[in-house]
Each structure stands twice: as structure tokens, then as C-alpha cells.
Image (tube, rainbow, N blue to C red; front, side, top):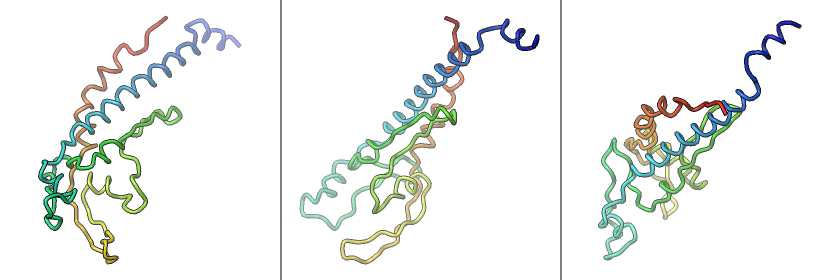
Length: 162
């Protein structure tokens, strides 16, 4: 009985817990948003000639559009990948999840394959299948690495008494 009374003398525990939850939510949202924006900004527009060829202009549909160099972020040709990077903070897990959403059911593994590299089997317009090998073009990992050094400063003085 005396133990519970002593605990209550130090500070308002619920108030501290609420302040920690509020601070965590704000900081995690700020950090997650910074990682998302960094990943989006790392994807540069494809060269204009590549975009024109991709749209079929100049009657040269057979020439393949330019791709970004292996090891650098992918080009944002259609901006579909760039626009579909989101983040979510999950309070129960004390974690944020950041990355591209599933683009479509046909080729749902492309964002992960771009990040890590690998092979995919794709269907061609003629109905046959083609195995394509992708070199890694990371965009989420470098964004996390670039923002990671800012984590500690974001948490400094995040809980204040009111």
C-alpha cells in the first residue's frame, strides 16, 4: 500500500505517458515524412528523349527508353512510383512503415525489385512471357541513410512539461 502511494508522489504518470505518446507521434511523423520526401526527390525525371520514345513519338517504338544507371535511384518516367510512396505510423508497434504501395496486381513486385535488384517474369503484349533482370536502383535505403543522422536531434527536447 505504501509503495503505490510513493509512486504517485513523484510525478503524474498518466500525464508523462500522454506527453511521450504525443511526442512520439509527432517525431515519428516528421521523420517518416522526411524519408518519404527524400526518396521522392531522389527520383529524377527521365531524359526528354526517353520520355518521348516511351510515349511512341517520332515513330520509334522499337528503341528502348533510357534507364537510370545501376546503383542510382530509378528515373521517374511516369511518376507513378514517385507519387505512390506513403508512410504510416502504427502506435501499437511504435514504428513507422514507409515505402511504395502496391501499384497493380499484374506486376506488384516491381518497386521491391527496383530497390534490391533481381529477376521478374513479365508477360509481353503478344501473350508470351519474358524473364527480365533488374540491377538494383535503391531509393528507399539511401533516403533512410540520409535522414538517420537527424533522428537523435529530432528526439532532443521532444517531451516538455506543460
